Length: 446
Ligand SMILES: Nc1nc2c(ncn2[C@@H]2O[C@H](COP(=O)(O)OP(=O)(O)OP(=O)(O)O)[C@@H](O)[C@H]2O)c(=O)[nH]1
Image (cartoon, rainbow, N blue to C red; front, side, top):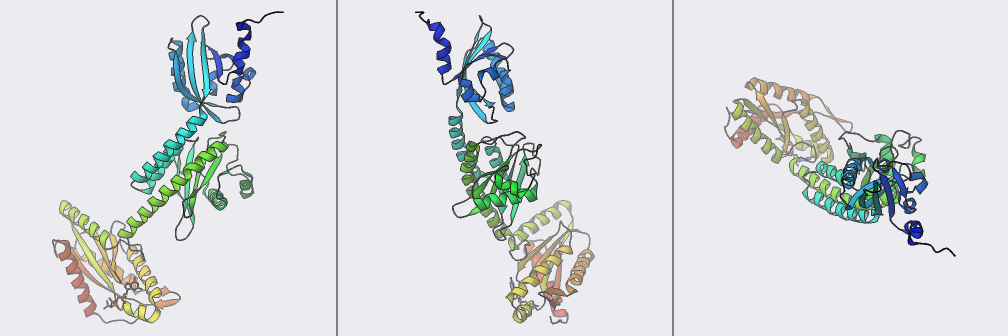
């Protein structure tokens, strides 16, 4: 009987190892790999032998992998270097290496350990923390969504990211964010992406663009040859579904169930963060804008007039304030109801905005009182011309619920600095001038 030596048994031991053992020559070609490679990389040893190991590394990790190989070849034994590889099935695998150079054999000996599971767990923990940090620190929704994009790109392959949210009032779905990795927008074909997101929201579960359900939507959604896949997850808070998040992959990207799981997990955090940021934005808006007309309110007007006065002082220029009050507006409410009055006020606001330049401010101070701030006027005549334009715009009958209402406006003008150095003084002058105008003219009933 022939007794086997330890050396004879070595290949059998090596093939039982859970880690993959590589022997790689100085040019980077694989000259030997044990059987474990099939479980880890999806390729058989025969398929890998003779190939360049670097070709299987994900493109983003190639430069530092080359640098690491140089260190090993220079004689530095290394433990703990990590990089990522693309498996035969397209999935990514995280590897941790132990490697050294054999001078005698002129070969790099590397032992690769699959740390994908740990990496996912770590990434999930880090992402959860990062998203709640971002939700806390973000100054506005846009800043938050950019940060969410950055965080998600650390979890799954992302060529571009899009976030669709439902309007609280109208329930309309629209994209509040779309950006590719180079900062370009849009990344998705919006009408189809909207339908895709609507399905994801309706099913309340993650969906890949090549899922059967999507095929019914459109023949060529993202499953075309030159566009990568879309992976979408619903954004669900404790109360409701507020939208969907879509990750677009590069062509050839394979999103695994693990990726779906990861994204679904963080989407809950993202949903809460977006919901909070939206609420904050809405509250800020409500504090500065009039809900009925969408015009700046008294508070924002005060800010604007303060800055305008500062600019006038600096540039030694003039500005005008026009105080506008609708005549007999109470009668509209009394005769046709508050809802009709509201529609009339909205139309007045719209017409006022059409009478001024974009840089000017139209604000609603209260009820039927509006104010217009005109910067860079040369003379009182300039302001009078705008007041006449406003009177003209108001004189056209307003169609409210198929009722033609006629309305007139009383307007008072104050010029800075002629009619007041301070803001209060200026507004008081305009207010008094408006009342004088009202007293002086004949009333026209609606
Ligand atoms: N529909 C509606 N009415 C409002 C709103 N805010 C205030 N009002 C009403 O606007 C009316 C303003 O009345 P007045 O200040 O007496 O003004 P007027 O009837 O135009 O009379 P003159 O200013 O003297 O011409 C009041 O009846 C308020 O109740 C609003 O948001 N919507």
